[in-house]
Amino acid sequence: MQLVHQHGRQRGISLVGLIVVLAMLGFIGVLGLKIVPTYTEYRAIQNAIVTAKSVGGNSVVEIQKAFDASATTSYISAINGRDLVIGKENGEMEVSFAYEKKIPLVGPASLLLEYQGTTAKSGPPAATAKIDQ
Image (tube, rainbow, N blue to C red; front, side, top):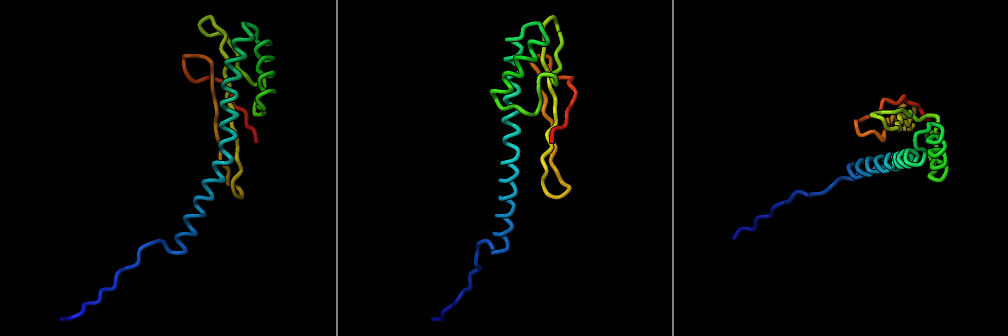
């Protein structure tokens, strides 16, 4: 009887591969930690314009004041009431906004997020953009 010895190949990830995977996961995690607060603020702005529209009625100044009051309680710093585009559409007051958020990454590289929203049912707003760094 003959004894046959087979050498199996090792399976798994090398140390260099593990370091690369961990570095990529770390980068994605840091990026997520920078993006999530801007998205949370965007959602707060969306809610604030809906509230401002219902509270302010047909007055531009009242809508701006209502938005600023909501912005204070919701910790909104990206835009204020003066940055809103307020106008009549189909006989009803509509409130829109658009702004950009620039997130520095490494050296000259940065990530630019463009946020916009409206209370109008007709689609995306025609608001002017503002850069916030």
